[in-house]
Length: 589
Image (cartoon, rainbow, N blue to C red; front, side, top):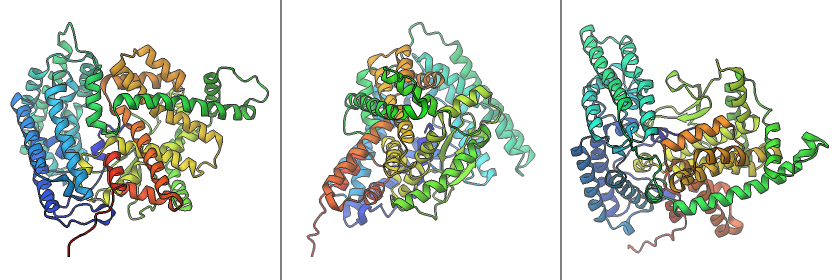
């Protein structure tokens, strides 16, 4: 469910001489041609400075490199961002195509964000988990974008930088957050096997000469020791007055501005979420009263509305698949969703881009559920996978709790969100738009917001036979997105305590205790990302309503959906601007 490596989920093709002409617009001006050329040089320089990021988006020219996080490298990055801002200022943004306008603003936002992170947020001083190289090494090892020997040799060359990397990390860390320190320790000790054993196991599958393999294994041992040494250093770090994990209002607002790129502020989004929670409670109360006699007969209905809803949800949650049927139940949903979309004519689905449903690979194991993964934006030919977790080996009580949460209603909503017409479908449409910028700087609020938006769209179209039970459970599911926003802002900007947070999640959002505890841990080691789901959903829904009003009798939901998706993974506010833009009149002879 968590889109931790969000950039690796979205695939697009890079074409140096052609941009995505949303709405059929093609490059016609010198400014557009010059801007496209600029993007090519900009991206290559960006990847030189960020080889790890380059690897995870499928740009493999710098796979063997690792940037050491020194003061000098920080200064070089700040210099780079200022250079790019100066270069951007030379382009008259008003004369660019809609597609290039979006790219311009995405680059501008990214450069401002990187500069702000280095000069204002300075989390490299207090977030030890930001110094983790293991995920990139795991990507090189496990993704089949090149022959295994080639990937392993890049892996080997890249390892040469690991000891220096972590020595410098120790110099940079000044006042680490306790929660982020523990996260870094857990992640490094939990992932060091990628270097310590997985690499050697992969070498055995190749014909690389024994002498060369010996050198490679020896370097891996040195690298693993450096990683474990960093974890030991963090454990022993003495810090009497550690920095709080809470950002505070000013930093939170700034980060929200750069990360979410919403029309409103974080405070305004929080206020809207509070009102949305009230609305959902009212609607859930109505449905619970309607359903009560069906499931409880003449039993006295609770006077407290939240208690009423909780009892109704608890009863409906008992309807779920058996642990051994979890994977097959998810797989069975895909053709049903596809058929429904075709029947209701909600979107055009591309049959040439099949979704490959598979058992979750071992290196991804750890959290049962479902997720969509794909190669990076530069690897258009790779498969897109719907990874389905397994409950094999779970204790009966744990499996029962999990399955009650992902009951027969929520399981269907989950598949809408993750696959069709949610993340996977958005990915296919984004893939038709060959703007590499919109892929590598893809807007999380648009991506997550679309997935949440499609849940309601499907139910509004009658999915689930318009059963009130399905609507009630979707309201519970939607409460998760809403309360994510309330929680994140309340904790980081308003100092909400753990006790207050858990109470809100269990009582107001009807979540299990274990789920609430897990969400508290997440909000203590992350910030702002939890707001992306509701923010994007709110803005897309508002845009659809405004589009419907403009089109009046000519409005068609399918037309809106496809037009919206045609702009790639851009912020909703920029898509809105393009959709409502007045077409330019060609005055040329």
